[in-house]
Length: 482
Image (cartoon, rainbow, N blue to C red; front, side, top):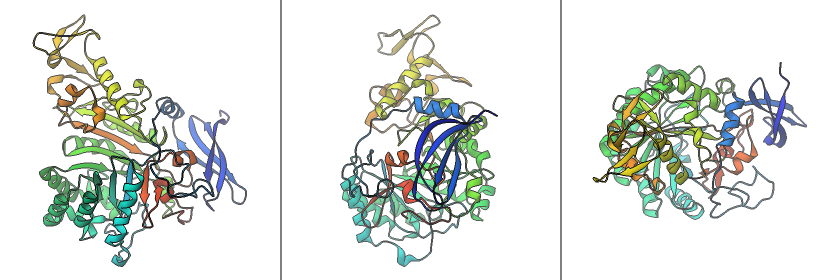
């Protein structure tokens, strides 16, 4: 057996007492682990990556231009992670503010990080929620983006008023995190949400068969999920599918979820996988955990190699190991043409993603980089095999050759799309973002990742807590912040 190779140090937490402790990262048999030791409770070892080559590759492809926090709210006294509020040492602005408007839920999922109840009296009132929105406007740089979450927000009859209040106060983007049940069943309620100005749905969607949902919730759910999507399509509201992923649960369906999404473009704009993390409910959560390489390998296998591990680059998030993203087009035959690849190198910003993706597309066109315009103004590519206008060219991917003229696309609705607008204009209806977020738990905790976190939960007393800190528990389920 190859001996343990130390590759770094880490500041972490003790799973027993949540005290800050030091540890090391090491490689053994091609896998990356954290080993840490508490003077009182002994040593702990946790797997953080099943593939050292992929782990190192993500580091090489990661470099982010960070915006500082607009207005820190707490002082540095105890040190991270005990001064959240957010403190002046936090290195990244909020990209998404999570506003929890209820603890109530109607699902009773076996895997869940939230503590649910059915006590309506515990819901924050409208004045408290207004104060939470004011915290967002005070602390988050433009554009402000919130996710209304819970519990299940649609259990509140006044949810349309909450959404409208956010919009009236000047919050730019309002996303609703929901299981979709009430939206599917209650047209009048959905119409009120749509009229209030909700921008998108963040829809829990764990698979394409009811066996999956019965295992987690004891209930059939697929028809309800589909009906919620249909309602959004008619209303022109975008949807992101959000599968929790766990071993012995739905890892075998991650490719089918992408296929499902590709058939509902452009209403479905993305699939955002969330591998299960330990939240103190059950030891089964530890056994069910899926590492980033394991998830990406499953996607590659289940899409028959059309979407490869190498098509996923680090998300523009806290660190190289917090998330991964693939941008892909879907052709008329349902095939995938990924636009991103690790060979593009590090990308610092959305503008960088756009420009390097354009370069990647150009590199797949037959011919050379020698370009000219013909008398009609159409872009021409001249090479050894062709001298054709852009509309006649073929793009090669791993599985097929697709004429540019057959590609429709989606929305990059950001200024970062920059100068490749010609291509984006062809991509309005078949553009899909596939991403994943590797949330931390007390076993895999790294202080560096939390210090850079840009997903913050807004508390009722007007503080910002990084998501992984807010949901952090010890091994008995006692929370650090929640």
